[in-house]
Length: 115
Image (cartoon, rainbow, N blue to C red; front, side, top):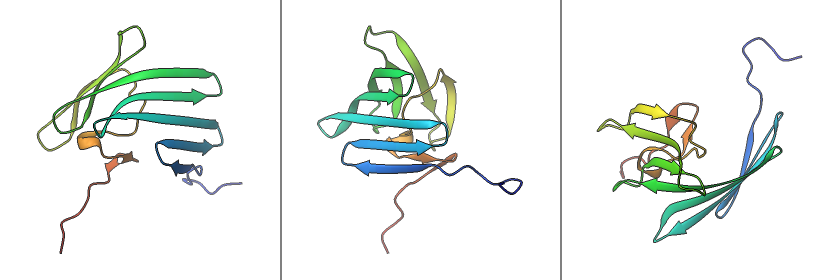
């Protein structure tokens, strides 16, 4: 029995461009494809099927538009100048957000200043 307020453990393993996320609800395997150093496509395998998405980033590398195989818009996300989300539609299938940084629990992991 878990204590009240305890979170369910989720484990993510990083193997190069492949991420495997294990949780009590199942396993998700995401494979990213890069063009000129920027994430451009994503293959997501879940227990209920496989999805292929194209990731369209802005000049900062932020994931701002995701389309499917047929070119239809799956989701879009805009940001304020300081990286706060605004105007989100649909479910963004990747945890990489503002400037291409990984979002974990509502927070972005941005590199700190060099000391």
